[in-house]
Image 1 (cartoon, rainbow, N blue to C red):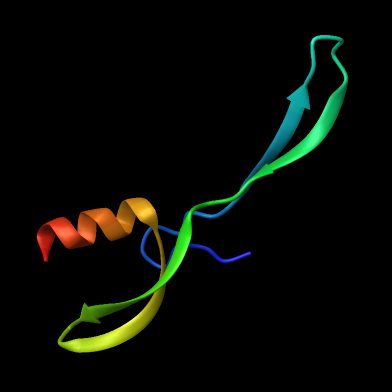
Image 2 (cartoon, one colour; image 1 turned 180 degrees about the vertical axis):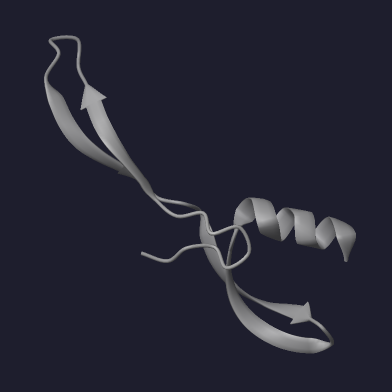
Length: 60
């Protein structure tokens, strides 16, 4: 499982709890994209989450 190279966001885990209180495992994965970004004048391939990608495009 990949994590964001900017904010270190990664997956979380917990339980689905039904009406009868039966617990089953669930995982929520971060929305990670492999993109090319201009960092310090050089193009780098980075794994970033959608929130960081959106913020980066606003300031670039």
